[in-house]
Amino acid sequence: LHDALPIYLQAIDLNALAVEVAMAWVPDALKRGIDLGFEAWTGPVMIDGDPDRLRELINNLIDNAIRYSRPDGRVTVAVGQTAAGQALLSVSDDGPHIPVAERTRIFERFHRLLGTHTDGSGLGLAIVREIATLHQAGITLEEDRDGIGNTFNVQFPPAREATSAPAS
Image 1 (spheres, rainbow, N blue to C red):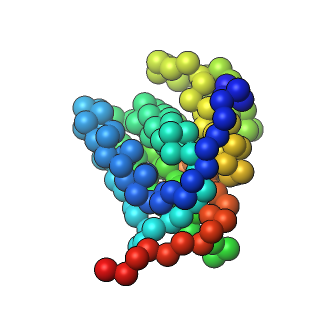
Image 2: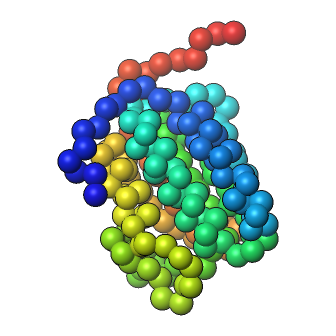
């Protein structure tokens, strides 16, 4: 989908970017009665990324989560770091359980889960996977921690230049 476009990597604080994108979804979440939450990391989570592409990745994950969550459900966007220093973006929803056999196929273009009656092109998660791949990030899907819905995890390699936040 994006193969022809060049990618411009720069040092980005994934924490700040994810908060900014998630905030824009608050009105949509409220309209559907969705509790949209954000769990920030304690400080900057630096990655090498293309800000426009990463915005699209986060937007698609949040759009999907809100679209498929049950009314009065919960969507949580979280940013963290693994012990190995990899940045982790997670989006959890209260959507229908995705069977293990479907979990790789949902990232294919135009793939839609049977029995879902929601508008959509079936391209959102394919775009997410392509943007993740451009950033050498891995994406996984697992059951949500509370047993309702799903959690999409995008794991980015650490920034090449480890940067620290200026002291205040």
